[in-house]
Image 1 (cartoon, rainbow, N blue to C red):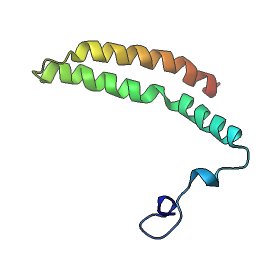
Image 2 (cartoon, helix red, strand yellow; image 1 turned 90 degrees about the vertical axis):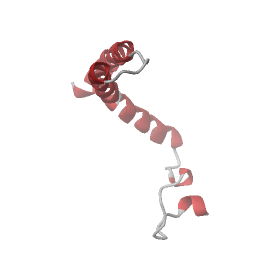
Image 3 (cartoon, helix red, strand yellow; image 1 turned 60 degrees about the vertical axis):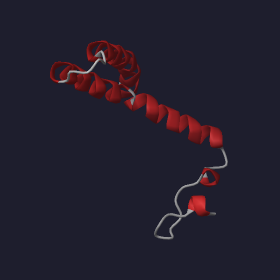
Image 4 (cartoon, rainbow, N blue to C red; image 1 turned 180 degrees about the vertical axis):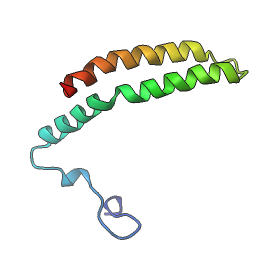
Length: 84
């Protein structure tokens, strides 16, 4: 299938390549997501605070930044569960 072949003719990972127990694979992926979910929110919060100072758009960068910061602190507690 074309969906399973990259430009070099090598197979890339497909859904059908998952282990027989898909539930374990899916749970493993979800755990990885929870471990790192806080970082993008922190990045976009910092980016928004910076752009609030340097751009002249009608977008409320401060509100967006505080929303992202709140999401960062929410996911940070989830992330810390995996570090202990």
